[in-house]
Amino acid sequence: MSRLHSLPVVLQKSLQNRSVFKVISGLNNFNPESVFQISKAAGIGSADLLDIACDPELVKLAIEASNLPICVSSIEPQLFPKAVISGASIIEIGNYDTFYKDGRLFSSDEVLALATESRSLLPEVVLSVTVPHTLPLDCQAQLALDLVEVGVDLIQTEGGTSSQPQSAGTLGLIEKAAPTLAATIAISSALKENQKSVPLICASGLSEATVSMAISIGASGVGIGSAINKLNNELAMVATVKGIRSALDSYLMVPTIN
Image (cartoon, rainbow, N blue to C red):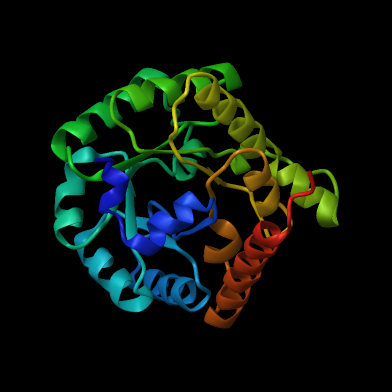
């Protein structure tokens, strides 16, 4: 049986319906007050999944605040077991954005090694891995295939930090999302060509204006970080979460014309 069947039923249905909405608080966000505020907004706004830093106490806090399944992110696999004991449903190698500003990059070999170590440590736990956007698109696609071979259950894209929008308004939002959308197309195509039915989460640089694009090109869901966690009050966070939830739901309710 697939490890994905160990997830809460509601989250399984969202994966099947390709409507997953993951709120990301930040790999290096260990501030309990901030994590609590983001978690509460995610729960109120009807997100499906909450992605937080890998810390057992934060896991407990986030579950209490959101009542959502928790994904913990880290690049240190040895930190995962305690977080899982505290209630995390998914472990993730990823959310590298905070490292790029310091010049820290991740090669395919390093990501693959981290994934292999994580799978060995927790063979029964759902494992997600973010594919670094700093790799060429063909290398991103190949890494995704290699990750599936070592037992990764979910693949996530990124790209927002490399984007430099030149336009205002909706056009600027599309420009911001372009790198992660391009990665989603490349990886989704590679997975289909190789008959790998692994859910793909499109994350980084997305907004209410672009989440439907991610679903239309093959993603099973979206991950939203800075559009929410950079806000300075709970009301604004809740409004943004609700807006993205509504944008996803509205797109998925549109009938297909044959």
